[in-house]
Length: 119
Image 1: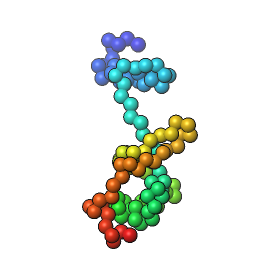
Image 2: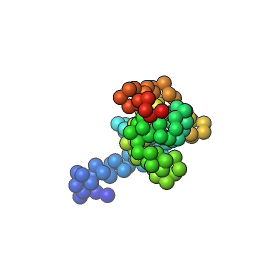
Image 3: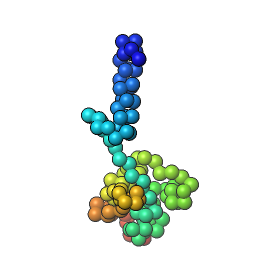
Image 4: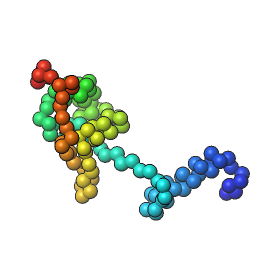
């Protein structure tokens, strides 16, 4: 393809696609930025915290039906919530099994998001 016949925007898109293909093939690509998104399982987090669905939903401001939908597979967790939970609970990927590992070292319930009424 003659690069002089395409717009700078199209050329940039083409270069980006070539870099993505090279990266997918395992080739090093200078300046590439990657984001790793781990599968977040709210039920696993909730169970590790020994919380009921209602307690967990109240503590994090999640509608109970939404939480139930996530746990029962009727709804998919959105990327914003998944990223928040992954960051908040320091969820990392286990290399051997591909499953998520929950590390609760960063978890704190505060009086602003949890009260005695929730239990």
